[in-house]
Image (cartoon, rainbow, N blue to C red):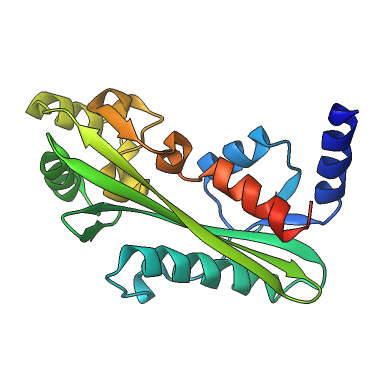
Length: 203
């Protein structure tokens, strides 16, 4: 009976025309872990246009803007927007523009603890019912060798990732301690999202 209730709720959620306002393959993969069926419709929000230093406000505003832009184009749908940043010493580290910037970021992260913040927003149409929240995870990097940094940069993996690394790729060996949600570091806090989604939809 419990399994039947789970399947009934999942079927009900999937009937709501779920839309992911992101082209991140990592977020798409994580949403699929939850059994969600969704379409991908990336927002065109300029992330550089949000100049907010506070990390929580930063990710919350960007996730809201992304979800709202896509939701405004739909009469019916459950739109999910998200934004992830890396923060070191209260400074937001974006995506590196080139090899030099990637090397500088990774060198700064070496031997240090930094924070990964992800904000997410859900907008349901019709009606515009909105839910939002965020997650933060502490990640500690061991001391990195220069050859490790250069080798990782040569894979070209750093360039589309905040902080110049992705915990799910070769840089997984850079982190020796993670305090908090692992999936948040990948790019989406699936547990908190799942719980907030159930609450929003009154399940």
